[in-house]
Image (cartoon, rainbow, N blue to C red; front, side):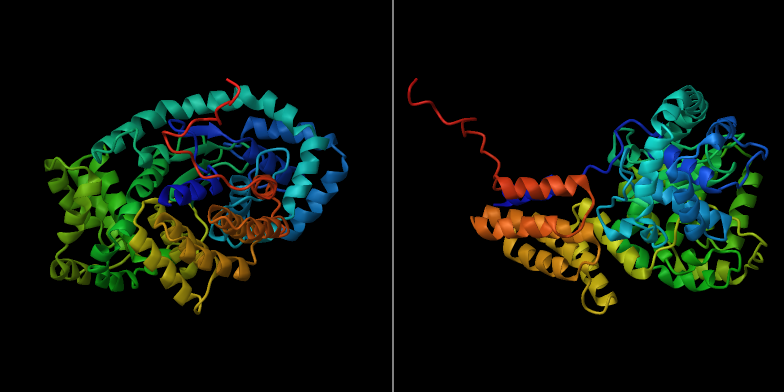
Length: 502
């Protein structure tokens, strides 16, 4: 039974990961969405130093475009744009990373928490972008822009590859590992120059670099380190919680962004990433010490400890995945408290200085749900179940995505009855049409597995009626209606029935 259920789970989850070995790329979705908002009125950084000549050429080319979608884009952009320039760009970056490829550009996310709150209100934008894509021949413009993107990617690759290998080598992580392969850098040439945006989807970091005269290698390396290390603070959550008392000192650091004051696991990761970055930095000991002291005064309270303790890691033979518990276990709370009590924290800057690229803020509930997804992907099923249950409690006793997560945990634990119970609850509670539809798809497949075809068809039909615009979900449901979900054949089963006439 476990094999059937595992296949059920694997078949129902879309492939969200980037192609292995492809850490750097340009994205047609990003190009199209960024071009659309340029046509609609996004003028930040136009003509400024570092602005991309490609952006200027595309804007010039589209000045004469008068298709129906132009005014629709203008109206939508005026309604949806945010006053803060960084927040405004951020929502469109998120949209581009989470929408379907051309020609539809409809928002597609496996889970509601994959859609940042500010993006959930942009669902109708895809229909307008699709119309614009056809009317303005964005496919043709994209193809003409390829030589420019290839030249820019070559510039980045020459700097990026050595850094990725050196950083992963320091941590003793294979370049073939899932951690290494999951990191993705997208090149965008249609937004204001100088910005960097990072996203964490499905436990993997995607970094979007906008036009830059210099490759922002420090920010890319820091994001790469966060990508490699953040999963460890989640995996060893119990060990990290032992030292969480130190977070009290961070509360008094005016320069520390609020998200680190309320998320000690993230603060731990940022402190460790900063320490590793300084250990790898080609600088004098005095310069490294000054940088660590600056990080401490900004509120990254564990940066000095990690910087010192990494000496032990360098002398050890284990990789960071196995050494991490020792690294956390070596924190002397009294010693670190004494160090922090003597610190005068830096004042808040007029404009916050970030050690990590911008990323949308998540609620405490969304953080729990994302943590549960990560733990399930890591096959830490007990921890994933506990986290989804904690999310349910945080939501007041029930939550659609938490039930959906618990259902998939039950599948992996070969408990179809419990899975059915959780997916039924998820379908009942879900407001997100994709989550509702997928819960019904799972229910249909469970009923097919146990031989209840009539009930299975009802669930597939409910999936079709859920309102999910995803083509993939529709195909899954239609396949379920037309034919029962089939169990995998055993190795000794023939591929087809023998012919009695032979």
